[in-house]
Each structure stands twice: as C-alpha cells, then as structure tokens.
Length: 348
Image (cartoon, rainbow, N blue to C red; front, top):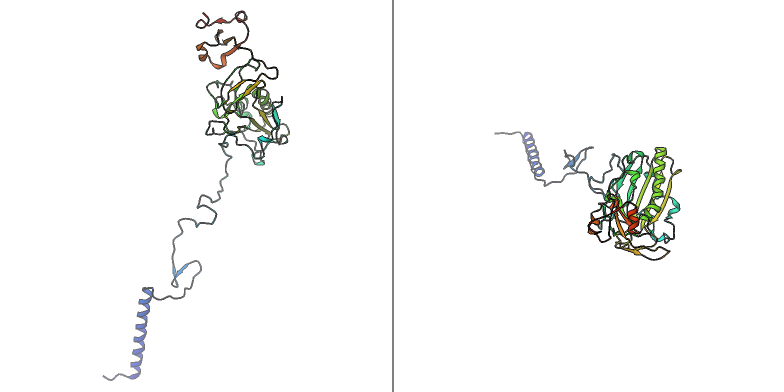
C-alpha cells in the first residue's frame, strides 16, 4: 500500500499527542505530578482544581480562650445570687487589724463611714442573698437591697432550734435579759422577714445585738418605710482564723434613690460583752470581774409560760422553750409574791 509521506507524519504526530495525553492522565490520577495551583476566590483548591469543603464543626481555637464557652454572650447577666462561701470574706480595703480595740463604744467607723459598694451595685431593685455556710458551719456574707416588698407582715417566728457555731450559752445577772448570747440576725428580721435561716444567724453577744447592730438596722427600716425607697445593705461576719465566734460584724448601708443622702454608713460592731471574757475559738465564757460587773448566783429558773419556778439543778429545765426561760436572783418569798408557784418535782 502506498501512503503519502505527508499523511504519515500527521498520523505520527496524532499518535504522539494521544500517548502523552494518556501519560498525563495516569500521572494526575496517581498524584505523581505536582502542578501549580490557581486559587479561585471563595474556594479551596487542590492540584489547581476547586474543591468543595464542609463548614467546620467547631470554631477554631484562639490563643488565650476556651472553645465556645468563652464566647461573649449578648444575654444580660444577672447579679450573683450567692454570697462568698468563705467565712470572713470581706470587701477589699477592709482590714480587721486596723480596727481599734474595743473601748466602751459598741462600734467603730470604717473607711470614713463610706461602704465598699460599687456603682454597679446601686440599683433600686429589691433582692436578698445569704451566703453558704463554710466548712466549719460559720455564716458568710449576707447582701440585700432592702425594699418595702421584702419587709415582714407577720411577727418573728421561733428561732430557738438554730444553734450557730460557738453557741455556749451562759447567763449573767448584769447582762440585759441575762443571756450572754443572742441568735443575731445578720440581716435583721425587720428588714427581710427571715426567721430561722441558719445562713443568717450567728452567735452574737446581747451587747453587740442590742447596742451595736439594732440602731443601724433601725435607720434602714425607718428610711424604707418612710420613703418607699431602697437601701443597699450588706453584713459580713468577721472571723479570725478558725474561731467559731465572730470578732464582730461589718455593716454597710447606702440609700439608693438619693445616692446615700439619707442613709450611708460603714461600721464594725464589736462582738463583746462588758464584764465577760469570751474564748472566740470555742464560745466558752466567764465573768471577768472587771468594771464593777459582779455576777449574782441564780436562785431559781422560771418558766414564764407556766408560771412555775425550778431549782437550778432540775432536769425538767431542759424541756422549757428557750423563749420562756427567765432567771431569778432574789428570794423564794419574792417569787411567791410575784405569783409564781413551785414546780412540784424539784421543790418538794
């Protein structure tokens, strides 16, 4: 067969192109040839060809943050509902060591009488929070914005079943109402209506409760009742080390609507009782015999409810409700004249 030379060359060129094309396809399929990529806007590329990628299932890590949970939220955050959990936790700037020793005045002014609140705290909206007890069972900070809506409408209930840390009760003739210790409300019942809330009751002396705390509580109550306004109010028991009885309480208050014009104070009330020596580590106590405070022996224990009197060693005294117990330092004849009758078991 005679083939034109020109046509023969054309066939050879076509065959060569086909062979080269087959080789290129094989090399590309096997990844054996790297070609420069040409990225297209908005697409990832691989080997110069656009590749569709799936959206990432999680946000990329950014140095210094935790995944997802550290992302800022557009949801407003509420004020903490729980106070600090360490007993003795106190505002920055307060230093117990800077408080002068007790000297016949039930409180000391702290921080020039300016509370440690922040501007963010000053919101005219009622709330109340009571810190968790610490590992020793001691109370922590109690914080409230006292408004009329929080105040009680009923009389205070029974709190005698609560025994705060360091409760070693003793009675002294020179102490008002004889009992050394009161179950002292950190936030007074008249302000938020709390009764037997163990997070709000500490072992406090009668002197601290009546002479130290109550006058400051009354200032808050009077303002709220008279103006229908709000008072930011925080009370922190201050414990030294692992002591079970607080050295005192830090009381802070500021009227909100008038920015402290009517009520503003920051004071430390001493948990002391003139004439009594207190072991703050345990709560044990005894008359110290100083300052003319001389304890008289209890001659009889009275049940105010039943009108009967017991000798001090009578075992039935333990069954008397604490609110009905009274102590008598006079004679039996005086008791009989006052209308009391002897308890038959111990007065035979």
